[in-house]
Amino acid sequence: MILMKNVTYKESTPKALVDILERYRARHRLGQYFHARLTFVYSSHKEHGYIGNTTGEVRTPILVHNRRSLGGYILDTENVLEVREARGGRLLWSRTDEQKEGSK
Image (tube, rainbow, N blue to C red; front, top):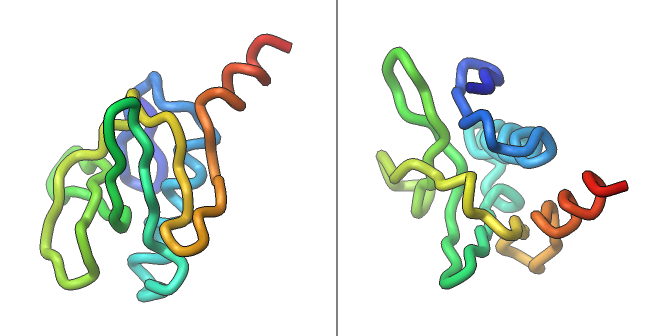
């Protein structure tokens, strides 16, 4: 397990992805909603939302639907192919880029 600012990520989650999720989780927590909403691309679908975390002893990242939502569901970081900003679609992270860098 990877522990980052009291949030636990699966060991298989790439460090670059953890860094992006933590940066956008902080933006959501601080109320900077304009640039905090993300799009997660999976092989069969896309999901949109803000990054939050569960409460309790072991905190995990969750995807919160909108800023009025009180909860969400655990983010599947193992199967994410791309992470983009929802507004503008700027690519923040891609699994293919991560694999290319690993093979160098």
